[in-house]
Image 1 (tube, one colour):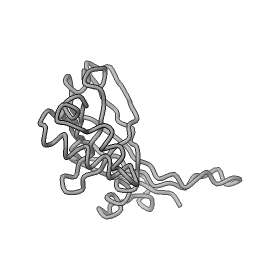
Image 2 (image 1 turned 180 degrees about the vertical axis):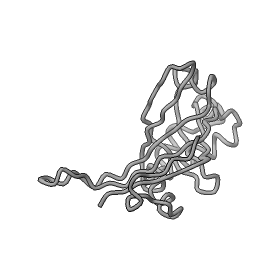
Image 3 (image 1 turned 90 degrees about the vertical axis):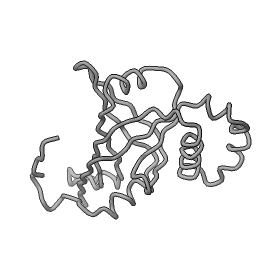
Image 4 (image 1 turned 120 degrees about the horizontal axis):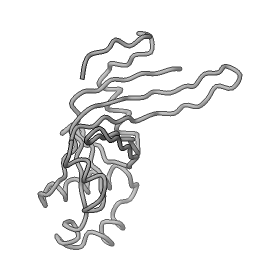
Length: 160
């Protein structure tokens, strides 16, 4: 991706700790994909793994997303902290991060187990009932599609 200079330096976010906080507190991301000059965009909930600097997603084991990933794993995504529209100011308070990376379809059973732990711990206050109900055997893990988005580059912008 070519380097572009943000027009408003006062809005630029470069602090890695802020990026990690936004990814840790966020619950969903919007991911853009492309294959053969055909765009596709999807919003998904995720689990953030700070050690791998990656997001994990669960999905079906077949479908349009997977077809796009197989054709072109390179993606761009965003997570937004929305602080609301400022009435009578024609302005909006937010913090957004945009990141580029590669989506991988996870096949390894141990990584699937890790990914689902990351997802459950990220999204659920009490993941035990879901774990007990849905993840009873290795077969139950194999029946879930798992994606990993490895973040290669990240930038941010805010308006207060």
